[in-house]
Length: 175
Image 1 (spheres, rainbow, N blue to C red):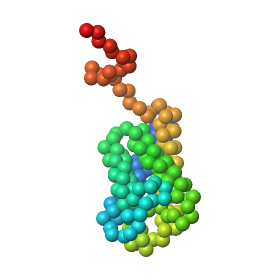
Image 2 (spheres, rainbow, N blue to C red):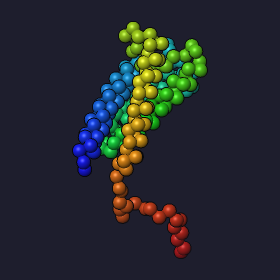
Image 3 (spheres, one colour):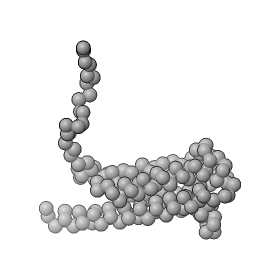
Image 4 (cartoon, one colour):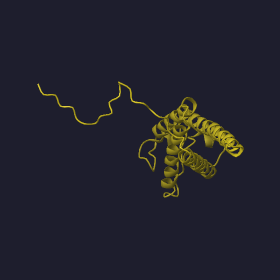
């Protein structure tokens, strides 16, 4: 390895750690805000969402659960490909939700639940900020995935064991 490769790998390792830490912080804060909100008594929590026609309370609970699953994946999974893939899938869902909610001008994203309004954050500011955060997460994780794939680093080799069945031909027993 020459000096440039070592330096580039060091920078990529630092960028990777930085991104993963910011993802954990962002998703941790937003999932906490959602979990605090679902126990509130505001009427909006019992109304149906415009994009996904279920009660906002249940939508917030589901989103918080998925966000925490991605956080746990980042923390405990040692394969960066799967870490960035989880973030990329989740953030693409966030972006799609923001795109769909933009169709209805009066609709706002309940991404922070009721905590945003309790902190004095306007709906417009929260929508803009969280849409920007979702775009940051999507594009940064996509760039890291492209880098990992380009450099043949994404997937570890998995050797089949005696427990795994890799032959997909049907087994027919004749008695």
